[in-house]
Image 1 (cartoon, rainbow, N blue to C red):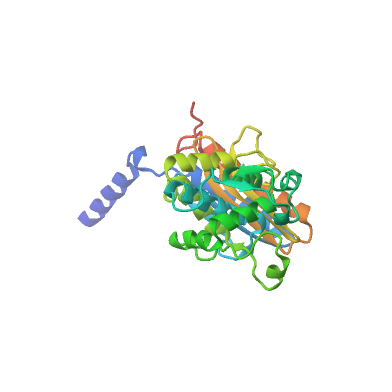
Image 2: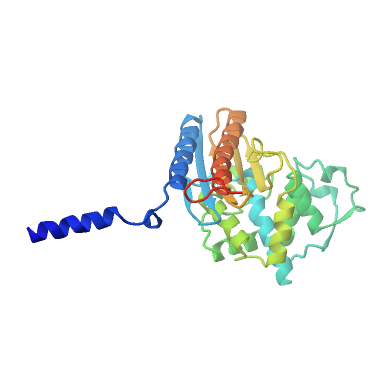
Length: 302
């Protein structure tokens, strides 16, 4: 009988625990809803899709086929940009203000800006080349930077930070290399990890980090921001090849920025793939936007 009384008292005390001891659940329920919606979008996609979404506040992540290796298309220009800024801050390699004199022999397809320059006359900087690469994905500008920054140094930077799958293997528009299997590749998880390392200041110093992110926020035709409100800042780099659509970047949702990478391949309908990436990005944004302005219990705060 005494044992029964003590057990009853313990149960009463547990039931009377103060509200402050109870764990909030609403953000987790919203997270589960986001995961379900993203998974549904991927399941309806007529192709292969990999997704990585990383909360830059508490570092919680969701991945779907996150370690699958995909072609990067022009999204491989993201680690090239990181290495350019790293070399500039260290002073031992390419510098942002180093000059490049345009040579028409450097032209490859997908170079609408560089094609308009005067061969042997137009002199621009590495920063200008990077701007062409980011804003309009100019392939000749990218190849010029690869020659100046060094393909092997881009890959060494990636390996130094534990990114073992993301690899720059060829210059832009090198179809012979692609046919040999020398494709530029990455995984969704590694792309968001690279973005996280930059955002945390683990690769670049604060001034370089800020400058690089400002360059990445240049307005461009891409998939992540397509459905987002016009005033949302997005630092991203999209990519496209036949049957491949990719986009990776940081979305600066108010009070709750997040990194996102969506990679697709074997796309039967490339426009549908682009729209699927945009839907995933919107679904993620809707989660982070509401969590960024609510309390742990779900109350919208001023």
